[in-house]
Length: 125
Image 1: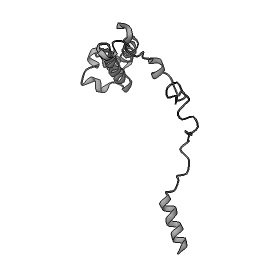
Image 2: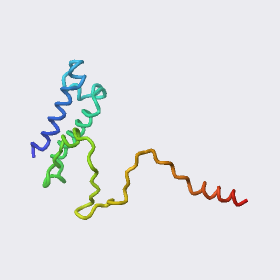
Image 3: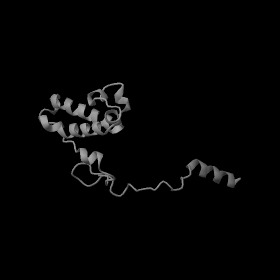
Image 4: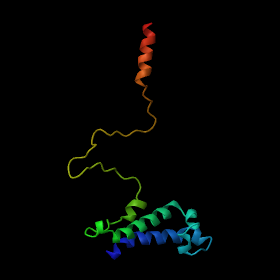
């Protein structure tokens, strides 16, 4: 279990080494993780810092003692591009197999039913 956070720790260290706080401004990585320099870090590094803290906290959380921390697939979360969404609930059939349709964003806006009813009413007079 002590090695369950090593992947996210390595990713955080790599992100810190590539950041402007360390490379350009020549601050220590430990200083870059504390305020006020943490605000200048990229969002990716801030997210990794938060995830690493949650991982370390999970090591002492009594609710997770038997199962341990969930493995963190850093490569899948950070480096992967577009992946097919998994709409699987448990082990059964997919929850949204045919009901979800993809849109391009260029579809015409559907008119509100009240507008349609008002037009019908006006034409009737």
